[in-house]
Image 1 (tube, rainbow, N blue to C red):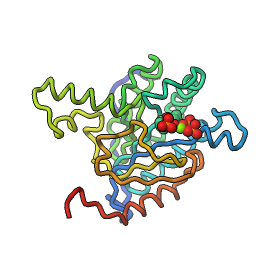
Image 2: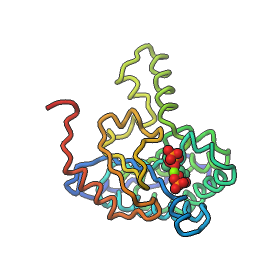
Image 3: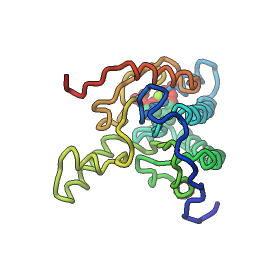
Image 4: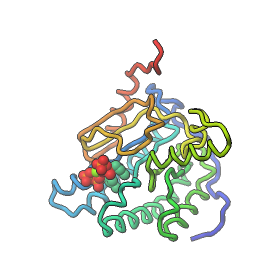
Length: 246
Ligand code: IPE
Ligand code: IPE
Ligand code: MG
């Protein structure tokens, strides 16, 4: 792995898809990728196969997000509560994360994808942290879609950290907390998608979700396709957002 810090993804033209695009109007979509285990169980396969197929769904959806003109796509990959899972599953998920970055980093660069992380990924093993830092540095100049991966992410942890930083600077208001969140540099959240039928946020983007729209599907994450993303965006495009006004 190269240790160079400078970005070597040449900035190309900005996201060429149709801007705040396709008529749907969404800039930032976040997905709670749930149901890998249930997908595998339904096929009498090991859980791990569900996670592997989940990575393929990630690949499809990142490409689609670019084509559909999103500015940012945030994917919930590992929560602060997922440490409660068996050690072998956690180790396997870390292995998948590493393989995903190693195999897809060149494609991110070629497609001008900028990678960002939310959550305290520095709690991961040093080799995983080093690989993530390398990928962040390499894609930092990307001017296309921003792919945000939530790793060791918990919204309550994020809000507590942000409130602490705001307090240390002397002013605690919604605006100063928002400015200290891991998502501070990202466009406001427009839409949260959750797969596999659960209708809860599971400690994901609680603050950012204040006025985000929600879209739920029974489809398990490994079966999620660009057509599902398109359907979610089409539904979003028809919502009337009022933000408390009238
Ligand atoms: C989502 O699938 C992946 C992660 C949380 C890492 P699950 O592993 O939660 O699958 P189910 O919910 O058990 O079906
Ligand atoms: C949410 O899914 C976390 C991720 C998708 C990474 P979980 O499967 O962990 O959520 P719960 O436990 O069903 O609420
Ligand atoms: Mg789950």
